[in-house]
Image 1 (cartoon, rainbow, N blue to C red):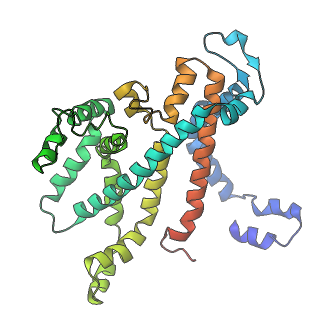
Image 2 (cartoon, rainbow, N blue to C red; image 1 turned 180 degrees about the vertical axis):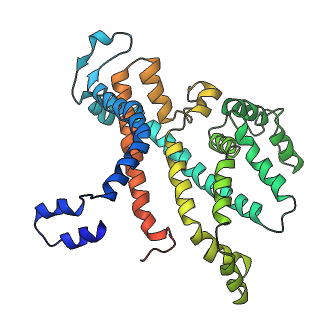
Image 3 (cartoon, one colour; image 1 turned 90 degrees about the horizontal axis):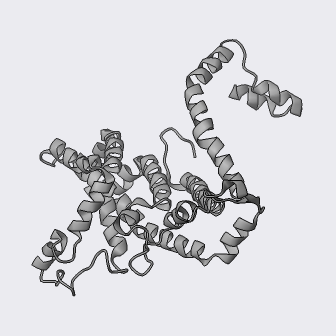
Length: 327
């Protein structure tokens, strides 16, 4: 098909149709492919695409859940209010991006380095260690958040008690108040996030085991040390998986919601430092039942996430290596 397309490039615009016309066995293969894809296509249309269109229509209305019969078309008023008249939009975006810039590199680097450790042939009990690092992902997220709220308790939490061993005052009123200090809250939330990086570790571990061993053997013969091999062989070979984890992490952080909601019901405590964008969206759409404005906020976040994802895919051309790709 692509050969035909190349041959058709110099013809008239009507011959372009011929380049994509399927014939014989290709047509039958395409039909079977669409048949097996049909459950996903139907599910996507019913549960994703259609709600997205409806939510965009909502963004053009002054619409509340308590009085849907009073819906009023307002055009772009919700968009103007969000972008130019509502400072909360930019405040919550600032909080979200600030937390993402702190949490994202810590989570990405930690997952990769732990995967390297668990892939080492010198590590004793590797299978047991892999199980232990993955096990926390099996704990329900709400339960994990409540557990960490006790771990980070300034008086009885074991994290502060461990820090006390080093001679630093961590417990008590003048100690480290992880969930009460706006200067420490993002690190506390990052700790909670690290509890669930087992999936990222597992994906990185699988990619590390796919790196050809002969490359390490050749590098060792040339005198390259472990750090040099890690930087020049391991990292480039697993960049597709790093890129995959990066995209998922960015999308997840833009939708950060559950942890601050469980810990303080989205109050923004302390001092508004946890007033994330999705918290603000949830309050507008479901607490205040302002569905029209909530839909506008949701679409704005979708546009931001799409723009960042497109940028990441564009930048991937310069640092993501795919085997067999010509550059």
